Image (cartoon, rainbow, N blue to C red; front, side, top):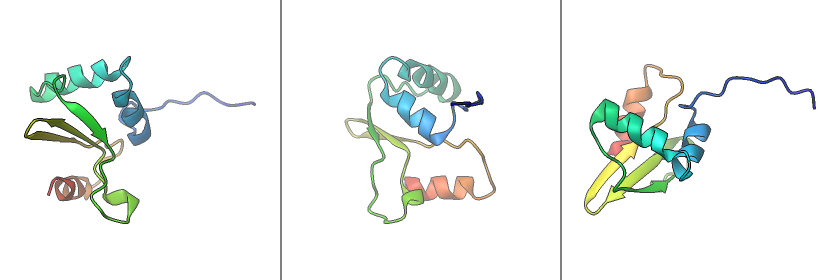
Length: 93
């Protein structure tokens, strides 16, 4: 049990998905997203890992927020690469 503490990014896929589903912590993401984008996610319902039907794990949206006929696709990217925005746009389509 000699574990060394390490930094875990709040933008890490696994961390962010767990915290955005937790009523105690989701306010952080709601406030941050509203500050950056102007979108208030409080009236939305999160639908985590909505599978688009693809068999490959990497081709699923991270978190979909639904509110009547409006949809917000929230993608968590701890590391951004050249293909990141291409993948994120493919998820949206």
